[in-house]
Length: 498
Image 1: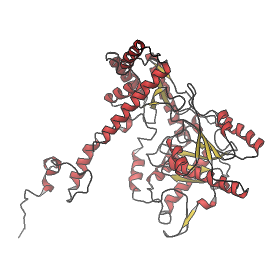
Image 2: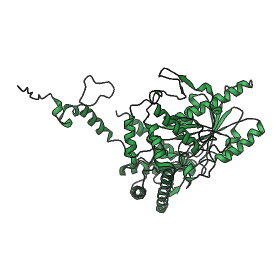
Image 3: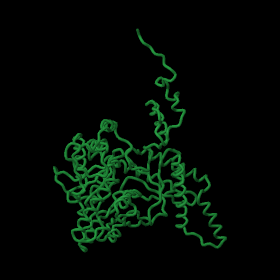
Image 4: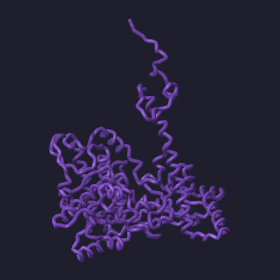
């Protein structure tokens, strides 16, 4: 006899998710729910909410890779359950990481033989890589000072004010004074001359940026090296250089192979690079390479054996996924030198298309350089009625995410917009963006001024009261302060919505 069952009204497996009770109630925001829900409902509800995120491909604020080939996506999913730290259990994954370190070290002209193992490690990004490199410099400097019988409690590091926030984190977390070379209008990277002047006996290293976050410009590492060699000779110090090549490390070897910025310079002791930027891998992979074993103090390396065999480890975290390491190796062997060069050339050419399109509008000054990271940073020639923050806000109506920001000290009165050109940003998209920017400019011209009109009224009131009129720079700084407050308040209010 065949047993049959009549579906009850409570049997949700036969219902559409949108016909179920799970879309009629709010999802928990602070506490775990008491009851389970079907997997289809959980997926659908979360997926629907995620639709409100921006489109990653149109996020022109980010340097991070947003597209990879389907074959690599499959490799990532096939290895997503592998914990990279289990080296004894996953020896091939460990071998792939070592191959990546060796390939990148040779790309950066490390002084090693063809079959000699390089010194380096994969990280979750350039932030961790910089922390590790900074710790190596600090410990080596401390060891030297203690051996000389000198105090070792006031280390400092010299950088430009244009460094990424991870350098400020390193300085604060590991108690190192951060000495910043201030910027100036028209010069938005670290001045090597001023940097070397700030070096003293407590300087653990000078950090140079190959690809400034602000405008993509490469700092002059060669000049910095030459000036520092001279100062070290005069003082008897041995102050080294670290190159933060997070953005430019996978660009310079292919677009500017003759540029000396890497281990060809004797004072460059370590280099970090982001695999998830122009290394062309999804977010979550960075690399740090040391010139030699002598540049990485042995006491910073830990050895564990409770996962099977003796395993050396030098990372800030422990467990992490293997997918990004495998994806990096895929890109290195899939593309090769030829493929990376072609992609970087395409990015550069599309940046030039965007730059020329913006210049033709007649409304912008180009702040970025033609050489460097393929991006376009630009500012309004006339911001009396409307400014860069308004352009950024209105471009979101067309789907584009283009950041507006102010420069660091002492150029904080300068506001710019920045478009990062990634592998998946085609010439067609570049031309489309120019058209949409032109539409935004036209729309803004039909709107009343938000900020400057208020400032003009304030100036008239001050004139009546006999108050001295503000200079152009003072006015611009006031506008910038207003918009920073406005953006901050919007972010705060947005965060209140759970």
